Length: 49
Image 1 (cartoon, helix red, strand yellow):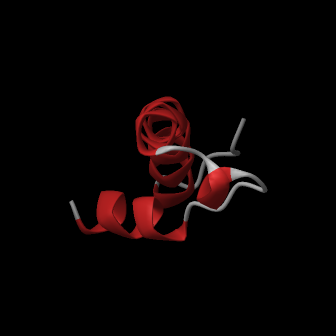
Image 2: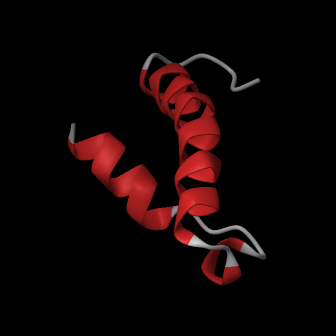
């Protein structure tokens, strides 16, 4: 859970701050699984995709 919180806090997209809240929620919902998978692969000494 610490990794998820950090990933959500660190998420930066060029237009993220200017998006309305519902669109920010959609952007995070689509980005978090990819970031979580990358984090998992890094923790297990695998190459990120």
